[in-house]
Length: 80
Image (cartoon, rainbow, N blue to C red):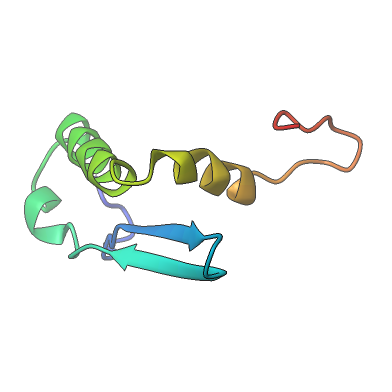
C-alpha cells in the first residue's frame, strides 16, 4: 500500500576507497510492479530489489546502514 502515492525509486550508494568516489546506482521506479499489489508482495519485491543492489557490493550494505543510523550522543556505537 502506497499511502503517499509517491514514486518508489530504488538506489544504492557505493563508495570506492581507491578513487575516493561515491557512485549511486539508480534502478527504474517500482510503480509498475507494485501499483495494485498487497503489502506482502510489495515487501517481497522491495527485498528482491535490495538483493540486486547489494549483491555486487555486500561490504557496502553495512556501511550504508551505519551511515543512515543516527544515535543519541550518549548511546554506544554498535559498529566499533
